[in-house]
Figure (cartoon, rainbow, N blue to C red):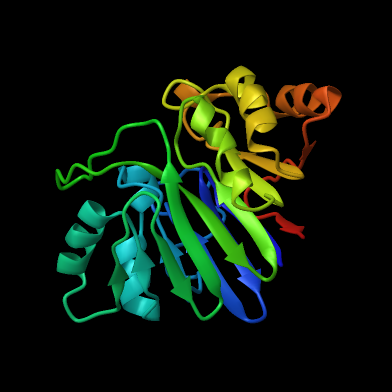
Length: 227
């Protein structure tokens, strides 16, 4: 099981020949580790519909045929953009979609979301089960107590956690989130892409590890972590 950080909040999860993309914002991302035309995908999972998360979803799905999963209102817009396929799955918060490689479940996130086309949609986190591992992408969120709930469904192996502040929780609130989530490892994301979200990832790592909450893995865009 490999997790490749593509920059901002975008990740590629690889296992046994399958690639799952999360929030593939590549075009227009100053820290993108790949171009939209270069990435493979067997599925695309979205936390919400802001431009820096929906990103290149439609173009990648058209090129690769990868099914897309997004919360119901966002899925409705995407289905209109992909009238000839691939399949678009449309769960709501708490819903799970089963794939041949594993599953993905939407969990609450405290944020806002409207797509560039004007579709209002509810933000979410993603609990992804793949390759015998459970990955929790928190999405864009503020600190709130429900971040502690996903671990009660099953132990979280690794969390992909925003730390940039301004649009999401900052690195200080993210330390508290690390305690709530209870993952073995954390990869910080959604920081340093733009001036308002500059953050000191090394300081976050020190605070989390000194508190004994988790091991923090800092990845530069393009780097890969193996579980």
